[in-house]
Length: 312
Image 1 (cartoon, rainbow, N blue to C red):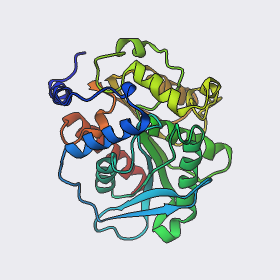
Image 2: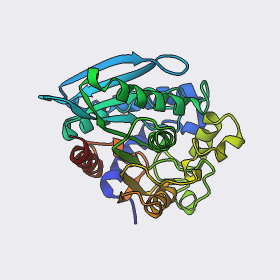
Image 3: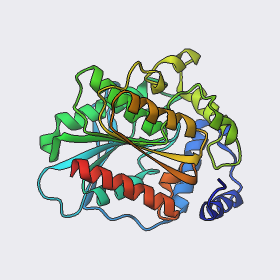
Image 4: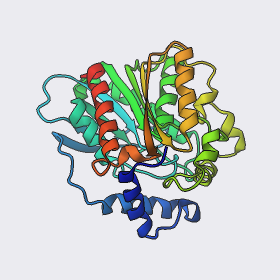
């Protein structure tokens, strides 16, 4: 299927800016470019009850987190620990602020957005360690935070979806915090790549191309041997059995499409309750394009609806 006209118009606007592709930038430059493009949207701020920036103890250093509370919340809340996308190299609390706000508002839950360490300054497994530590912290401090400890979910997009699934696996295997749900938005499942969708959508389908994934891999992983570690490539985990229920969102025109579909099949085969929704004519990163893109609004609304049903 061709890209939807509304998305094509947005991509043409982005192309007109004349920005260099990520692969031509250093990690610092790529981060600055992402921050700039998100700010340039100049969209109205999604209203929530309160937003609090704080730091929490981490395995190597304090971890910045941002806590979003819905307006009019009464009593303990369900909570989502959210990990932003960006190939484990770029992205921040600010680039995904609108997503966190929308999920908080529409699901009526606390959202804890995590600013985990990234490569190349902090290569794998630093991001995994921070993601798990933040999830454990939220559970351990549920009473103080006004959170129901049995109603905590993990979620994220792209690299963040990768971290959410890895945290679920670690929680299962280490008797970590009990998790109620997973929101996996076009997750990175295997840093080896090589699926058919890497060829079908290698170029010309938005900012994430096959070469971009190689750039991310080179900056995130300490070496090629890390690809085989399931904490980097969760598709290589021995089993997905006994993981919490999941919603997996995929985009048709995405280099990561096929590994997302394969993840759904693995979850189903291992007895996990999973719902898969594919968005035709969409590209990687579309989830963050609300309210400019109708399908992004619909995807965020669906995610919030499922989170509300499980957590609120």
